[in-house]
Length: 290
Image (cartoon, rainbow, N blue to C red; front, side):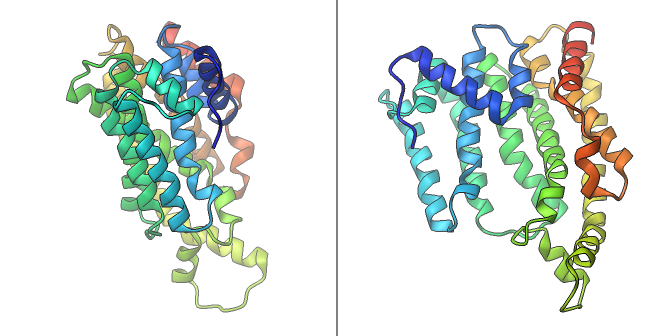
């Protein structure tokens, strides 16, 4: 674990750097929030990064659960007023002034990643459930960091935007998943092929073909969310917090169009995805002219 920094500003800067380096899209979003609120957003993004990387840094479910339990207890320490000595924990304690309001959604993020160790079969339902409890819960927590008085309708809208962005991230990561022999997506190949021995290239092509039905259903789900959430964009001009939470929409639509252009050639998806400059431009257009 990372040691806590010496000062509050160092803790905040640590979270800011983690967000900028490892979750650039949400970091760019945070730049359009008020300066006073950005540290809370960076702390939440850094928390999410710590929890979400658990599966990547441990090889066994039990070790993963130990790591996630550390974060559950870290949240308990914040609630008790004695935050653990970790830059993210101390930043959360200092910047989330209504911690009790945000806490349930942070717990949900941890619990959803814990469930991920169960090895659920890749289906549209499992992907939507995972996105609901990860990206959806995180976006809801960011909304509440900006507006602790947000009502259930506002929270639901923020969660659906976060869920759609998380699902978009699933598609964005497919080229890497397809190249990973231990990926859960490999099970779809086993279900669609009885061939025991295959050349690696043939196997990859068959996997791309095998996952297409799930990918198309996933795109349909994202498209439905975009259509539904777009109706709210004109309603949030006077609601700075919800407008911030819906700032994921221009990013979702950029990547959604890129995936549509790539068609079935999923291994080439990285070549079609928008760069940082286009994303920043889309966010500026949304916040200043949308």
